[in-house]
Image (cartoon, rainbow, N blue to C red; front, side, top):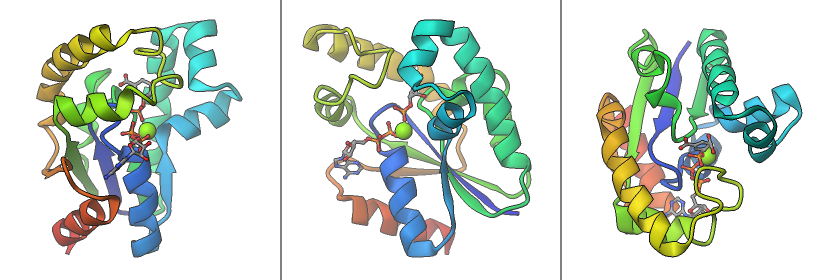
Length: 172
Ligand SMILES: Nc1ncnc2c1ncn2[C@@H]1O[C@H](COP(=O)(O)OP(=O)(O)O)[C@@H](O)[C@H]1O
Ligand SMILES: O=C(O)C1=C[C@@H](OP(=O)(O)O)[C@@H](O)[C@H](O)C1
Ligand SMILES: [Mg+2]
């Protein structure tokens, strides 16, 4: 089994790129957040509201392990926090896993997230100034984990298609 795992900060494009890479490569894609939502029949917002972040992180770990154990080839789009909790970043080193960090600047992330925050409970209630500061600090804290990926693709200023092509070049 081969797993292509996309990681990186909220808004870097994991879900969008995983879906588009899947169309071009014909490798099925799975979005970890979607798998979590389907498992408990709640949205990410509802999980955070009703059960809290720790519960979410436990589910996220369990389901990530399950996805890696399945015998299918797949492209997996992680959540932004996935590599930063439990031993998830160690799992990225498993046999058959190709991990790719979609690296975006604070500016790119801010510009995408400012209009796209309602389904992301960590930032949903922040104003613009709070969000800019939060992203800068949070990205700094998380970069250690993101940098454990085998490959890095910078996404700033690139279209979805260009990023997909960069990934295909890595996989070739
Ligand atoms: N070049 C691009 N690559 C990826 N996403 C882009 C790009 N330009 C704009 N976007 C938008 O940015 C957002 C990325 O969100 P998403 O794919 O959910 O990221 P993630 O899963 O990493 O949080 C989407 O709304 C997408 O339409
Ligand atoms: O960065 C995070 O901790 C999170 C990122 C989200 O996924 P996206 O990165 O796909 O938005 C989702 O898993 C949850 O809201 C927590
Ligand atoms: Mg996503």
